[in-house]
Length: 336
Image 1 (tube, rainbow, N blue to C red):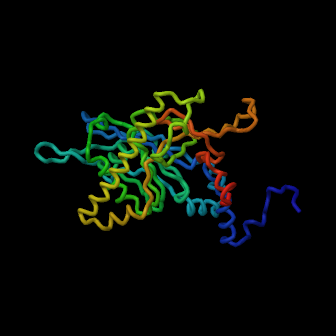
Image 2 (cartoon, rainbow, N blue to C red; image 1 turned 180 degrees about the vertical axis):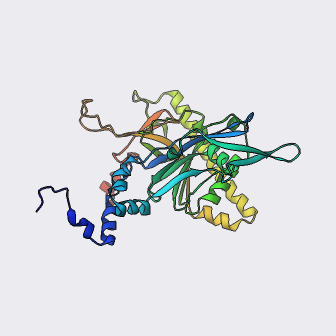
Image 3 (cartoon, one colour; image 1 turned 90 degrees about the vertical axis):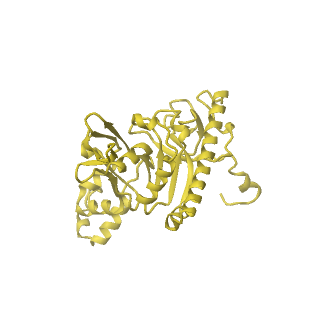
């Protein structure tokens, strides 16, 4: 037997099907299940140029399998989805017209190397997080993203251009129309509250462990605390505002469903009926890995809710701590 237990020289003689099964199980998962696929598209109206820049997290955890051999590389490509930004094939796009009705051409230029405008995700487990203004602008000017096989997306609403600040009463409808057109395999759709996007700035640290938390309108402010362990009046007011905004978004969704029914768009109506739609909160997970050096007796994982500037206790997998968990199991015999 070889002394090096890490070597398996006969592996290459195994059937390709068996090799594929082994490599499939060996594909590592990302630390964060939320991939912040953030890009900006800004317009230079004087020079008629669209500039695109991106801060999309790479997938270095896949490099060992991508570089190991052809079989491992094929299995990565088979199991994961490459998500990339594509510009218009002719290099320009037009979403405006002159007073005479002549289309105004905007030419695309990339401020980010093309190798930074894509990533790999697990299309079933991972949530692809995108920003509404740039997503709309991408498609308005002829760009696209291949969303086939992707089952989970979340949308934020950070302003990336001056025109984003202008009020557009049809924007919500435009977003849902676009999602329904470009995401054929979608099963879970989380809309980060519009109000929340006005209350905080996006974090650009690629190592941030993002989570998207479904927002329940019956959440109470006592579930949250700030860095001093209390919830002040301004937090209570902010929480109330965000919850009100979530309720308004839920109402807008049902109005959109009614609109589809009124317009006789049965195919679109069926698409939205079969998926899960929820208003959501944008969170950062802290697993408290340094709990020992902090003198704690045990780790205290938590979720920082950016829109609320407040924390929620969590389990070590990043899910919200259920303060009632155990009561039904103890008193009613429910399974743990």
